[in-house]
Length: 411
Image 1 (tube, rainbow, N blue to C red):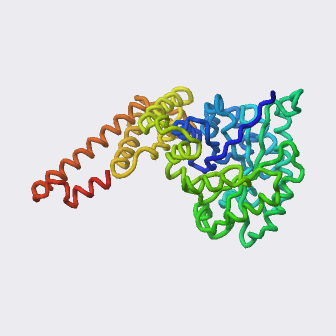
Image 2: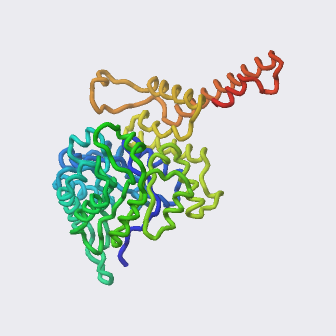
Image 3: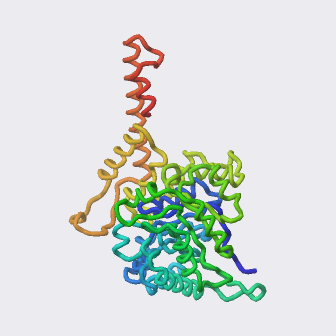
């Protein structure tokens, strides 16, 4: 029987400088049940057609979670940015060879650099050009799919193509504008495997707002997303934007019109939210949810393996740790860790002038992290002891002094 892509109903949005392969590994450790689709940060298509990133394993593993493809290929989505059909075609072709089974075209990023490259949300202003890029991606996906199954006629290895866009650009947030864009880019897609649409329920302003502000300032319009699901009942729609609670996720999933819900900032700020979704949306028993310490231990093992195999810099491997360490103790730990990374790095003559040089260290990532945690804990305990001693001297030994409360709050 032909293998089909499993439909995952919740997903983590692509976020530049956030959803690299190391952060996605952390999310898989937090939620190992295969319930959530994980999206890479946007990768420009010409890194394959001109930069040949697929031939550079060390660079490739930074952006694409190769390890997740072993048992979770259906749950990994690679997002590309493209302005030329030829670049998009090559990117899909090479990604398919790596085992990627879902590739998305970014038509929503409003950053100035992306605009200057004529991709991202500016593509919504030229739907005919975007349609050519989508057609090139679909052709590459079709060619990379296996031969049809004799009984069902479906491809033996289906590769999904999708488009993520906004509901409007600048002054134009009319339903007609969005309808024309979706209609144009999906007009020639295969009826048996149509292009999926992910709608960020905000317009994008090309001038005057930063990319971060463009994710917050424009007014949400979830109604427009539902209008498009009615206008294109044969297409699969995912809704994105301002969804930050279990109840909100459940409400959208209850609709027969919405196929999946995507979350970005909520997961960036609180990746443990995936555990709540596992329990309340997917029915995972609380006792099966990995603990913080178990996830941290497994991430340290992963980090040690990545450095050993690919010489990944410790500073890069340490970026996802913000999920574990907060407050004053967390800041202290991160400061110790960064200092220890620098101290442990083994410098070779002239290495500072070599771009892309291999970083070696005198201790493993996990050893340095554990030591930094110990130092931060010792500092915290010392602050607590000092606060208690001062409280006792002031006649408030029960911890009710302002200093004791400040230490507790900032722990």
